[in-house]
Image 1 (tube, rainbow over the protein chains, first blue to last red):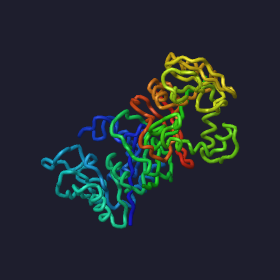
Image 2 (cartoon, each protein chain N blue to C red):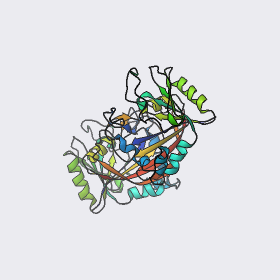
Image 3 (cartoon, one colour):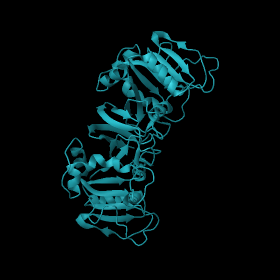
Image 4 (cartoon, chains in turn blue, yellow):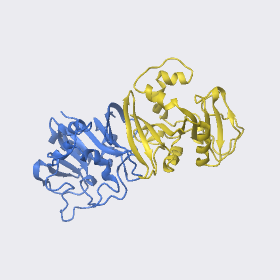
Length: 213
Length: 213
């Protein structure tokens, strides 16, 4: 069976989104800069059906991270800025009609909603029975492949505390956001990391860990 | 003239000391583990007049960090656990009669105290006129050499915010402390980092940045 892998871009001061997140600024003020290293890659542009971009030391990291993913688990704040119930259901994610996932995505929420079938093989499933159940559904959907934890910070924290993560990839970006959504909060020392790879690339450092809890 | 360099060991969750710092546990609960990567190096043991230890990818990092240091600036919490005035003056630092610095050390404090001349060329000077003045004294003492910011977190933060740091070396250790003294707090995005070196070594990742503010 596959593994559970989390990967996320984080600022030098430990934030995965800047202050004042909104529908207009989904990553908060300054947060877009956390993903510049990926945007400029040809591998990223291809994933999004576009041309251009470069190859550098981040290319194999990005390709490896997306290679064997059979399902994705994410928190609802990662899916969108809507809070509370889903209203008229017009919010269908940040990613347009054809999201770049191409696998089932399980969104943790307290508010039930029918599954959204998107173009290109992505489907959004809304899980109201909690993290454990969401992980089970994602594992089943992934089969022999891996489950990727898509974020955000709270979902990654929950998964780490629960001992559900096998591999953690931090893409650490050389900038200070000064505030926003903190990646690691109250992670107990019992969650152990083994550093397995450290790669410097343009505008980012990739730190890969095995996780034991 | 020399530069101002800060280097510090930090946990994956961004702490430079664990919770509940005390005279017995100067680095807080679990904090000693942040320095294991250095303790096991021959270069570190030699600095402290001892034998043994290994060589690995951290060796040139540690040697480089200590090579051209002409003076050190540190906060008083780094000098010791004493708070308030200096009492009977019996506290002479964490490092015994012959501290491993061998250069003048300027300790920022609100409480005046006479200079301590230690063995091996280390002297502790107590600066009550604030960070700027402490930096000036350290620069003067360093001459052509560099000033090292010894820590702790608050002193590094002050120096970053004030635009006083030329180079920042993070020794990022794969463990969670879960709480304690946070390295980066309220560092504004105007403090810019340029990643210049990323080195993976046993039990640590070295991330070197140039700083502009």
